[in-house]
Length: 374
Image (cartoon, rainbow, N blue to C red; front, side):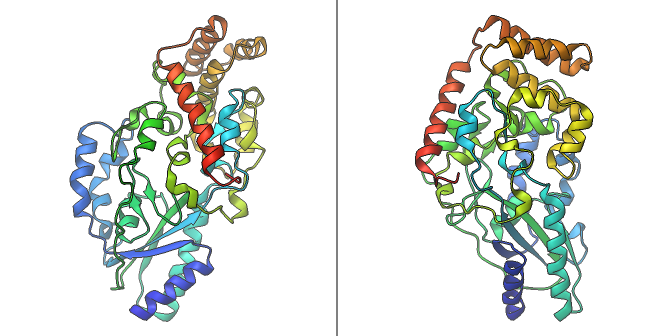
């Protein structure tokens, strides 16, 4: 099994994975924190997290006979991602850098499937099943147990050699492979991710209230974005990377080598007004094979309306918002009316000045503290 584990590491590297670790499927030590998080309602509308809790806590229920979990990571940060430049321009749309290219789920699962086939070729008794954010699997705790990193104060996985700009995937397997040892957390006294969060979603170290998280609000949340949080979203229309951008360990992050993860349709530098002009057919065509497609056109418009409301007052924006009102759904119309009121009045909302100051500080950190490509 030790020799096979070394072969697995080599095969994983050949498939493009930038990290691999092996753990037991025992997640009992993570259960209290997860149950407390759910009991506090911090999962928001994501009821599926509670509905499948037993499966999440016991991977063997997904694949009977599971003895080990092989966790892998794959770097995704695109070259010249332009994070700082985009955040600094309120007329441009900020999209979380993981979503600029093609959807990673299928790529990760296909490569994990290939890894499983290579294992089975030398160990015919192998039974395995691949996952990548595609089933009730606690990816970050499993990866932490496998030594791929530690869970940071922002609740993302961190590694002192790779930062956090990577996707995770798992291969459940029925072989008693030797396990790796978890890393010692190295966040120390740093609270950069907590203080930079625009909406205060990281309510304490290692505790995230998804209901305030921009990634949750713009991706998972299906209803209206709470009015008090809308000004704090700035120009972020799909996800948020602020806690990663400010993390000191991401100075050591590696750029992704996958062509599929490079920006498509110039989304890394797109103007808000240009995206607002898309109709649903354009949205569906441009996001074929993209993670963004799953939020649907209505939520896409909702998010854009908020960002346009946060942009500097501009007659062109007012005209574009007004032109879309007649065809807008009630959800989108609500956000358009809010954006129009903001554009016409130019009045800052409570907390907006602080949010803009945070954004400006973040831009300075990105420009000074990270490699130029970032």
